[in-house]
Length: 106
Image (cartoon, rainbow, N blue to C red; front, side, top):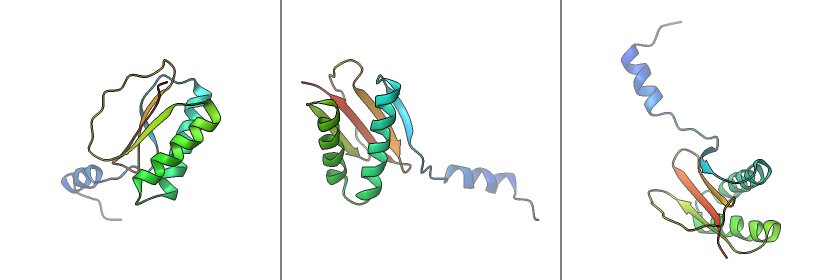
């Protein structure tokens, strides 16, 4: 097997797209965080090219499961500053560059 040059290997690593969920910040309990993460992944896989529908699915399911009023933003290249209830915030990435922020605020 031919060896890959160091320069080419670094280039390949920099272009790798991570398809697993990457949680950047959360103050949720472990159980809630796991359920929310799985819901976000399901919504993003179901609505690959429609971030608005993915966000609506996440929000509606979280409202049913954990009570109102949940908010969700799904997209690329955005910043945020939110006020949230303690133990009710999740910020994660999925599919490399899709960011999801999910929080509860009454």
